Length: 590
Image 1: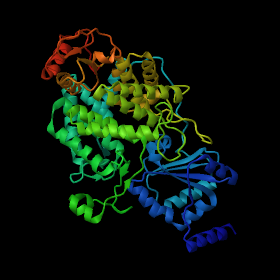
Image 2: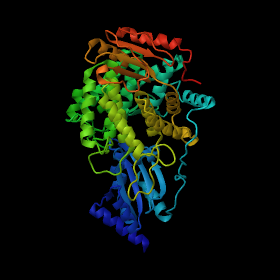
Image 3: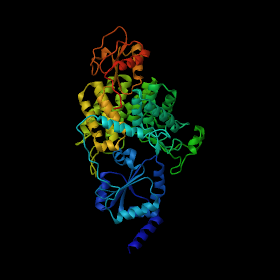
Image 4: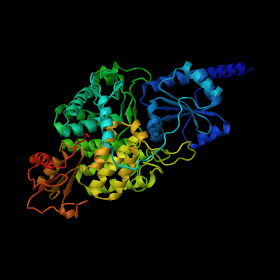
């Protein structure tokens, strides 16, 4: 009798062309699951993802899959870019991620990647027959904070050994399965190289050369990754890839003045402007890998601009998110500091002003999108706080510094996790799990708050940075994190940044030239102040600078400051000499 009912459901679905009844992730959907005592399937997809399109076209169009889902499940589909909390929780499963729950939100099964119709049918039937957690569902990681705020020498050595071991000496770059520019490793390598490590200098320069293969020769922008080597790209262009690579190439150009690095950075910035910039000056989220959804487009991306446009343009996700815009603003500000090209600063400022006007909720907290998504996410306020600080670094405009402070205050007020670090979101009504800290966000917050502390002298930002760091230093998090990220966070928290102060009026061309040169100084971890006495006391003024007859810069290391420097072209060399004299200088390596 049961088989006849199943057959009737299947035939009915086939005859009427039934489709999966996708629901949103919200309290009402979960209430429906409880009321109807149904299981729940979450299809966590990315709108730019090839295999997500294939799964939509094949698996979720299969009549038997549709029938089983209709009878036994509440089906939820979520674009992972729209829900950073879910994306953070399930990012290790890649996209598409398929998660099964009971009606109370308890996880039963987690699967990564494409599932074909046959395997999906088997999986659905198995879960229906035995709706208990399977081996893919492990216990929640215990959130802990350690009582120390620095790595031991042995921990540093272990992490550095692991970082070096991750480098692919045969094909170049960190990682073996997926080849892409990994920002934490690249930034750590740059910091280490600038402290004199030739091995890291060679590793990074080779990686930057190879990563440039992923830059679209026709439209600019960087493909997400390549498989196995650097010659087999996946063609989607997502915002994190653009902004991470733009930041790294900008920093490397500032360090080495390699024109290939500048060309790469400008190509990525050109793509952001030509394809992802909205009419208002904000930035869209991503561009699809496929011209036609579900069909590989390798041949398309071999064509010229003119040839491509005859066929069409792959879909652009025109959602505007505060987080992604914060990333773009910060990266463009970094490119401006490296080049002095006002175009990039203008783009960054325009995007920041629009996001502030449209997305701000309360004092410098930000909603994720203009749609009514709940709850608020840490990533949006954090990204915008970092963006404001980057604009302050680029301009010395104290308005931006104040906005960065307000964002940090909001994070501390709203996102502090009761045990350690900072959670990814505010609690959501009807949610089946509590907000959880994310390693990447706490790494970014640790750096942001620490840098804010050095600019302002306000110890509350030191406390925020330390709280995030103590979460990162817990053994469970270290084991799951990029070793380079932990090393950077530890180093920056426990060392003051390189410090340059320009003294002079902000309308003085000589002072402007000195400030520009200071921002182009090769050290990525630095504090550049500009004191125009007409603005009052300099934030975190720890040195009494003299008032001179003309603009000057002072370079300070850990225990001394230079004589006045009047020529912009001499600033870098003077700071180098000062650092060599400093007998308390440190390196990144243990």
